[in-house]
Image 1 (cartoon, rainbow, N blue to C red):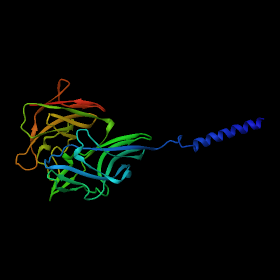
Image 2 (cartoon, helix red, strand yellow):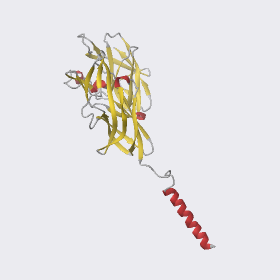
Image 3 (cartoon, rainbow, N blue to C red):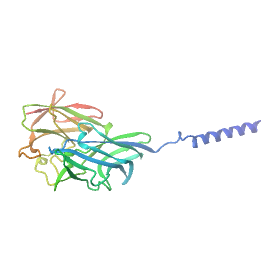
Image 4 (cartoon, helix red, strand yellow):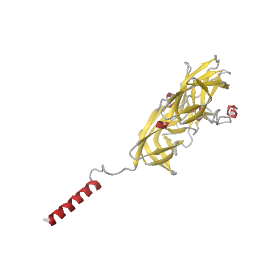
Length: 303
């Protein structure tokens, strides 16, 4: 009887070991997580641009200098980037990634002519995306992927900085976009009020505290734009409202610039920075503090 008891115990142990080792795999620990990728924009300055069409066939992510595919599409994702502003996003896709820290993502463009600019008169112009069909349009930004979880990341292209005219009816998409983890960001929004302004457009720019320099308002060098150091921007709507979405935690300065069509062409010309006060919770402040998953109402008073 003792021998039978010992044999039974050994058999039970063997069965339990086999269950955890094989079974249905539910007891195994995965080293993979997921990343979900969306894209957003701020408005372009050129009044004659109607659409900025992108065609994405693959998304890659880079960790420790190695770039891997996280999502690919038999039918490329085609979308008008200008349609997704003020916190609106276009969902690109979701894919598996090894747990770890990543330094950028790459949007692989499906073909050299598949992405283009559509003007308001319906004509199409070339859009140059350097290395777009090979190594991809690169968006820098650090994000972590943990095992068995999904990290939601947003690529903020901000066409106001990224899109430049290179001549010969060709536009270029510069790699100036930023990458953020959606859950770690907040929103700055409010209204622009005060004395009347004859400008055709006001644009709100957000800078990390202490980083704005008036030198950025000088005529930009070819291939660059004014307010290069801004983190985000938003055109003021007709009702006076503005929204700066996907702002990472921190303190920001707010700059307002005015634009008008002074030479009767198809573009708005820079007029200058507008002097303003910033009203938050009834107090005049110099900066806006943003916390994750929170909205700050910052009303801008024109002087």
